[in-house]
Image (cartoon, rainbow, N blue to C red; front, side):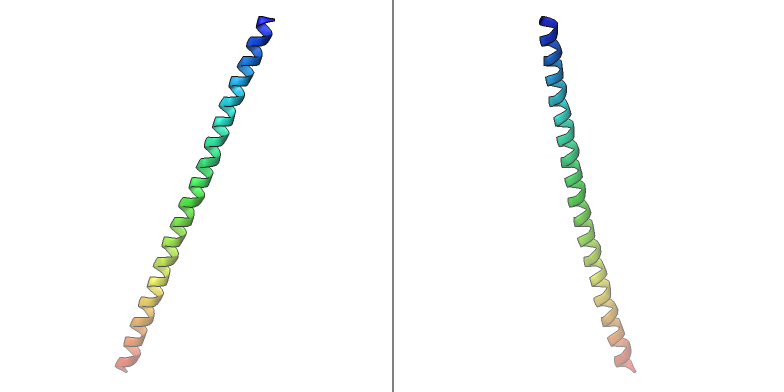
Length: 65
C-alpha cells in the first residue's frame, strides 16, 4: 500500500513538474512572438523612414533640375 502511494505521489510530482515545464515553454513561445513582433515593428519603422528619406532625396534631385 505504501509503495502504491509513493508511486502516485511521484507521478503527481512528475505531472506538476511537467506542467511547469510546459508553462515555461508556452511563456517562452509567447515572449519570442512578442520579441519578434517588436523586431518587425522596428524593421518596418526603419523601412518607412528609409522610404521617406528616399522620397525627400528624390524631391531634392528633381527640384535641382
